Each structure stands twice: as structure tokens, then as C-alpha cells.
Length: 314
Image (cartoon, rainbow, N blue to C red; front, side):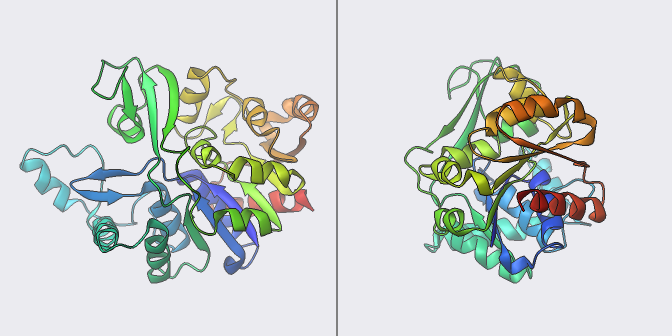
């Protein structure tokens, strides 16, 4: 069994490649839920949904999120009624959030609902939200003072509504200390043959998972079987806000900066061939650097990256 810590777009693409290398039934995706939010009274879980859509073959590959070919007529109608519509939910995507909200109100847990959605979309890998508890990623910024504190913005407002334009002063994961990993998460980390940290935002996507009690310790105790993949190539992030968060929190915006975050958790660190000059510095951190093409432009590139990561672990 292969366990993968994942965010949304980058993680989902990596997982698409991984299930072409190993049987999907052997893959457990542990997915960030710090981005979860309520819109229009519906509980929306962006990263698990992106992963599920990607593995179910229905994701909009151009956007990296949502359902391929979706329309937004209901959202247009809401706009006419004067509602904020900065968070884009398509007509088919809406059904997912209606289903999740109904099931949660009936007493189901987020991990149970995630399993039901995956099954209905034909996903053979296991998709686990990181926790059934509420954890909220909050970005402290120089935005005008808000009721939530000093320019404190829930992650979706920071990224989507405000376009990650505000200078970052801090990042916190509200509720993480009191939340528990979802059923199956720690078991997967203990029992997996290999643990992979997908090329997701190391702070906003992987950070909330590592903040849960027991998760960081589980990885550190099995460090020889862990590989991390850099989402930073030649000093730039392929999608916001990884670079903005790294810089705002005082980290180097480079593959080396990401390697420093994973040095105590992983044995292998995969970085893009464009960053070959960083391999000596990565090695000095006690990590085994592996060069690969980390930009996943198509299905072949996704598969090649997943294969290279697994092979590096032996």
C-alpha cells in the first residue's frame, strides 16, 4: 500500500500518475481539508473533491479543479439575486456539495461521505480527508482589519477572492491541535510500504495535515520510506500561493526551501532537472536528491514522475 499526503491540483495530478504505476486499490490519498468552507449554506471540501474528480476521470484538466464541461447557470442566477459569487461552483459540481451537506446533516462523517462520493464516481483508490474534525487554514495578512483579527483571512478568501495579493504575515491551522486524524490515516502511515508527499503547497496543503496530532511523528518514525516532491521549479511555484506563503513566512522560495521543511520527515527529495544545481545543498540536509521532470503537463509526465519517486525509494 502507498500512502500519499496531498493537496488539490498538484496532488491530484501526481495521484493520476501514481494509479498508472501501481494498482489504484493500493493507493491511499490523505487529503488536506484546511481549505474547507461553507458557501450558500453548503459544505464545500475543495481538495478532496479535486482529487476525487481527477481519479474519477471527470476533472477539468485545464482549470485543475471542477468538473470537465461544467456550466455555471445557477451561479449566474445567484449573482442576479445579489449574492457574492467569487467562489466558482459549477452546476454538476453543485450536486457534490448538496450531497455532502445532506449526508453530514444526517450524521455521516466527512470521511464516510468522501468514501461514498469516490465509490459513486468509480474511484478505486481510497480518498481520506485528513480529519473528520474542523480544521481551518487562516492566513494573517496586511489586508484591512477584519472581525477575525489582524487582516486574518480564511484561506479561500485569501487565495480566490483576493487573488493571494495581500502580504503574508502568518499562517495558522485553527482547530488542528484538538482534531484527530480521520479513521485510517495513522493506520495507513504506519502500514504503508512507502509514503509520498505530493508536489502540493508545503505550507497551505501539506502543513495542515502535518499539524494534526501524530501525523508528523508517524512520518518521522518511518523517514526511510518517505519521499517528498517539490512543487517549486527554478524559484517559482506553478500555482499560487506556494511562493507567496514561503516568502511571507521567511522561507526561501526554491526547491531547497521546500527540502528544508521536509528534512526530518523524508529520506528522498525529488526536484526538477532545472534545479540540478541545488542537489549538493539538498544532500547536505541529509536528504537523497533525485532529479526528475516535475512539471506534469500530460498523462505521460504524471506517470513518469510518480514512477521516478517510487523507484527512488527502492
